Length: 589
Image (cartoon, rainbow, N blue to C red; front, side, top):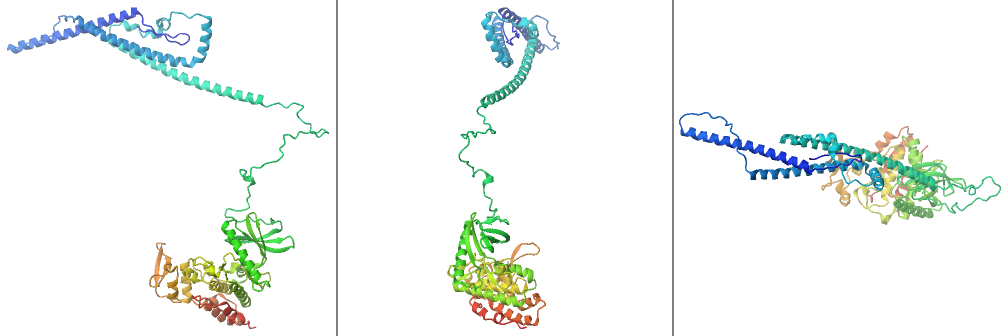
């Protein structure tokens, strides 16, 4: 018989006595005898039924058979012994399973109190002797023993039901013990965390030395006896990791962050910001040495831009040396230096650029006298560049400066300049509205590109409007042909980029968007004729002209027609332009 009991220390003891074993064996033998009796009675009934069937088969009369009430024959002793052995094996297997489940329950239930129980156990073992006899489960646990009171029953079903209930109770105990274990672990962890935090606080408090009154100096004492051994000799700053110490002189594009009032190179104080271009931003500053105004061109902080700035310095120096008397209307370079990683060019200060002059005074064009003077001065500047073999490559109103009296013009910004023998075909040289056709087609170019750009600039000064306003190189060619007709085929064939704009028949391929689908499409134009005239365009734009000025318009139209020639070799030269009546002739009063 199995018995379970819990003592004060939550320990489980399991014992099966010999007396209980004998009772179980007797019960099993009685159950086997009963089973064999029923089996033998069934076999006798079946034999009687078979005999009756045989008799019925032999005779013609029908008989009704009933169950016989004779007792069954007893089974043989060998069968009973085999049955007993099998039942013994089942009993031992069941007892082993019960022992295993009980031991697991005991281990889970007692693990929670292992630390405290072990300490108490060691103390009690030293003082008290260990008892040799174990307590029986039936004596201490009436609830558990009650589940096994019916084991003397002769019915197998009751035994199975008792075992099922036992397993159910063991599972419930296992679940409750696991929950208790988790709760106990959490409480233990919280206690450990609190204890560790308290220990750390105590350690920190202990580790901090309390200054003695002798070590603390008296800052109000007469004697200057402060200890300086804790003060470092040199203060080191982490410039790499400290973002506040990093210079922020440049913006994201590499332009210098100019602020009015800043002093550059310990000499120049910024007064106004004039503008910003592709290569640099320009400021007007005061030279603190002589209180004169200068223009400072601050090149972008970029390796490529730095090289462009050095090239510009070399060109301006060459021009200034060739024009020591300052007669050819090119800007003067005073000095240059490097400031905060930026190359700075100090130039002579002028009042404003030509585009600002046109916007302010020439919405319908400048007066004819100023136009003639400006055109002549521009041609003189181009004459000096041609003499030195320099192509400016970016002539436009933005790169032409005028003094405060507005009677002197000077050419500036030589960042795109190049030597005549160093030029290479590129489709994007010069600003688009002032770009010559040989550049777009990819033909070899020379000083004629500056003449074309100068003609566009003079027309803009005369009318206040841009002459060729194409949104791309292809559209620029269409604008050229609207005024001058079709480009000669001999020039098209020599062009490096002709396939982008003309087909094999030298017919123009116009790139434009479809009005309905808004997709890019190509339209072939075979017959191209001039639909616009320079004289008509100037008459529309120029208003309130005097009779003398109206007489000058045909001369201006002829002057520009000779400049706007597709073939650079047939284009008017600088000397021809300087001798033209539009420039040489005086305005009639």
